[in-house]
Image 1 (spheres, chains in turn cyan, orange, brown):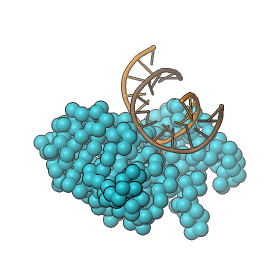
Image 2 (cartoon, rainbow, N blue to C red):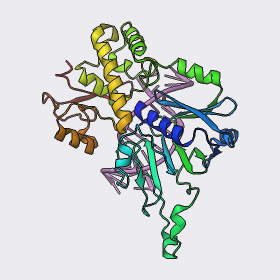
Image 3 (spheres, rainbow, N blue to C red):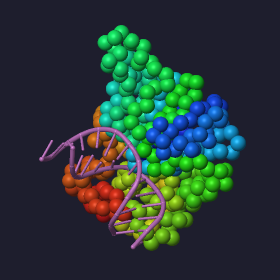
Length: 332
DNA sequence: TATGTATGGTAAC
DNA sequence: TTACCCTACATAT
């Protein structure tokens, strides 16, 4: 899932393809039928991403709030204008979307025509191939518009040229401007929303007075926005910090360092679409890390394997229902 | 076909 | 702390 970087990438897609355009909305699955009816026919006017949540504004002060949760994803089809700040997108056109490549690389369907993009939970992009029509010579069926609905689609947003399907979100609801403001007010700082220095002060002040472990605090969206289980494990390793240390016992400079590292990793994540946390590697290792999801992290998902730095076996434990990976030697 | 797992979060106990 | 929600896919049977 989508940790904070994915949501910022999605927001950029909406900014490019939906903001300023009239939208037709529907809920093929039926679970957001009323909301879709409220949205349909309105023009999207703005989009905001804060932490793991996205807010899409429509005419007359109506906002759509979406939280992807662990399984959610947006699938884009049709004309997809790629934000120039999303580096990897164009270079990957036509490439097969492998499982686990998080995010947002446009790919071609079997006919080599429509480009499809999925941003969110790791999953195969949905490629619509019409086998039966192929045999009867209706080759153009692959360009069907709007695209056929596949699977459970909570919300479909359609402009003249672009289709966005939302599936599996934890939250999908309409909000008033006050409700949006209240939701955002509860969230901790997001480096791509808040002034970075102010964010550092807020984050540091909160962490430094909490008895809660730093491992839990990094995952707390009220303390800092956008960090999930992968970035949590990686940030702590990069800082060589024991996840169990109470926040108030972590040296101030270390807390500030965690924030600054999050600023850096988030920027890399938004740019590349991948949770790349081994950015200071030699070129060959970097290439390998980018190519394979299993080589991309220091400790995340590496329980039982030797620490990349010291060789000690990486351990995993359960913390608040989530798996926490760390090296007991490097992070002693 | 059934089961387990996943980058998240909430509400109830 | 536990239960539960949401969806897709890999693995086991």
